[in-house]
Image: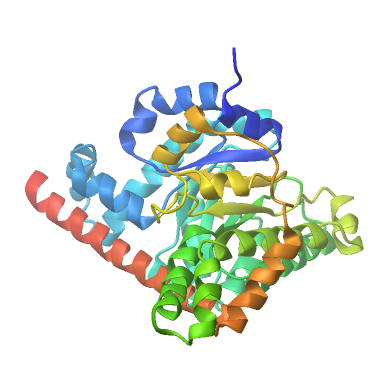
Length: 375
């Protein structure tokens, strides 16, 4: 019998996590089945996923009825719901966590995105969510903003597993890796254990093309005549090129003497996690990003539809090192047609924050409305 392509990814060193969480997934046998049959090794959540789960189903009505009796405000009630979901899902993943020596089996929970520019506020919320979940295989998600970097360093140094989200540039990815290394050095210097701490750096992919392609289309339509064909030729190339260069930075960082000294103390590498790998533009194949970014010692978090499609049609093969020269050339060409990559990354970060804040506000509103109905 042919091997499940999702399990083949695991053999190639890439962990598949589920970019989805909903109460029926872990209350029934579906999550356990995905772990056993597809080799699913973790799960990520965000306000958008919770908003759909709570607003579009009645799965949370009983819990809202139960928790609303405690007099919680809608925001605190939502936090209680997500802590219940993440903790329960983490329990289902516990055998994966044990089997992999603490490398996989993680479930991520996100801090309030409104705190993305508040270092102290983020750190305080991370600590509270970490204590509330009280599971060694939970990761708390911190946005990789400039204000988020000190919070990332501080929380890792305290021994909290951190998933850094909303990364769009190689330069910010390097800052995140530096924060991880310095946090681990601080723990080693203090004689604190490091062998069970894990972190991933969530690098967004298709969203990069969504924004850059829009700019390229404008140039192709009404830019200077000599630049139009060059702009058209660049469509769909930036997201993958960006991720491949980020992986190159990862390999360089964790192959150096600095990490080697930490590895001798038990520190593990901070893996890159490919986020936003579902295809947004119908002009590209549905598995365009997943196939291009198969890489050892990495994670791909896929939504259910992408996961199901890869199970049927995936062609696993390590491609992360393909055409690095072309990746660098793509960024030179972007500059040549007048698109500044750093500005685009900053725009994407701001856009990502705004989307998550809007989703967070919507999920709190959904909880508020459900409370009125069920209570």
